[in-house]
Length: 381
Length: 253
Ligand SMILES: Nc1ncnc2c1ncn2[C@@H]1O[C@H](COP(=O)(O)OP(=O)(O)OP(=O)(O)O)[C@@H](O)[C@H]1O
Ligand SMILES: [Mg+2]
Image (cartoon, rainbow over the protein chains, first blue to last red):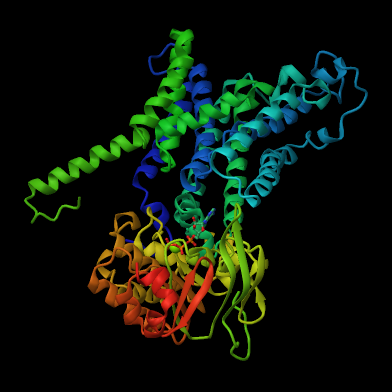
């Protein structure tokens, strides 16, 4: 049934609303347990846990961004880590400039690594990053512009499928090599680190950590609602139509390249926001974030969670990263093999991921119930 | 963007001297062919005659090597792409029925519904009562009222054909290119399809490609025979059926 109510896009999404309620509960309850329950209490939640979960929330937002284009528009980006990293660098640049003269070299204007390289003045592209709002705009704008230029060229020339995936991978690889270079002015190999504070709040303080954790959760919820609105709109149905039958969509009169470009840029911006929230929580951003393997991992999260549901991507990101934390601690040698295995298993046996299994199980139960109710054999096959 | 012309054009579609070669093979060979406003025209011809390729050229999927392709006398179709051409008022049903499998019948028709195709329009789009009425009317017209909320992928072959015809109707094009609509349909469905296409013709121009002679007969319209990318004969069905060349290459098999 196509409900006409203004909020139909939200009301029809029961699973998504439950998950959002859960995230909301987590970002309300855990801070209380961290800040106000004494450390020796059983109910105390450590700052380590808060930091870890905060990271997961950022990954979840990143996975959501990937599912928006892959699950709904069939664009398999193997370079989304680049947008995440760019957002992270924008945030990192702000925090570098916040250090001011408290760096090792005590230069009020230049970050330490520039002094070390004997640079005399700040490169032009670092201007403005001392301003928080400017930096926050760049968090979304930098990945957005890259996605726009890249997408405009690729979609206009009708690059699709494997070819598109390969060039997205090449894009993130090229950026990684570029950011490794010292003369790019982004700290080279070491990246940006030794951050001290954000908006004047020390990054060492528990309250700041909790605030970042809560912000990550809020960003995830808002990002989810935005994506849900998009995919439930007519635009979302055009995206699905492009995914299922691209050329048919053109013959109905839709400019496929415009639709792809829109959703690709939106997704890149969400990835940038995720990166910006991630960096202050881990305390460093370096060119490793552009590494192609990172982008492939995101795809695995989405595949494991279930592609094309939005909430599946969130579940997948948290599950796989929880697994990663656990296994890299317990059996560091085998994690990469497990990750590869996970991908093979999920593509071969779980085309709809974890969410798909639950869905199937529910459908079966509903069918059984219908049968037991002795319905007049009108069970849909 | 519908073209506003004050007077009715002489030809809704005008092809002259069109050729298209694939790796040295001439799929379309010096093809000339016109359709008048409101006309219903059937195209027959053996497999590989170039019928589908001709539609690809008209709808912007392929560019001809040489030749003129004009819409409404004025518009050079070789200078436009698929989306442009669709928005000018040329709709197409594919030989292999292609509906959007993971959208419902209703949603398929909603997407096809004539109107602004812009990205941001689509983001904030809400169907109004008139549009609902229009979609439901088309659903009834193509006999899918009971399948309204079915996914496109769950329809039978014949039902997909109908849905695609419905989508074509919703686009409200001036020219409909219909490639093998009766394939996979029962005799009764075929009959209904012929009736529907005859109804549509008149206010719109319709070009139908089909192999089914019963169907062509039911259309009772001028027939063009294509062979090796070229028009072999034109006339009423009786005339072309009596044509010896036509019998030799196509009918007499
Ligand atoms: N993209 C292409 N590349 C190479 N050859 C092609 C291409 N498209 C069509 N052809 C060839 O052009 C010829 C005409 O094909 P077309 O599909 O137009 O025939 P048709 O009249 O529609 O036949 P049918 O009745 O089987 O649908 C065929 O020999 C086909 O193999
Ligand atoms: Mg054909």
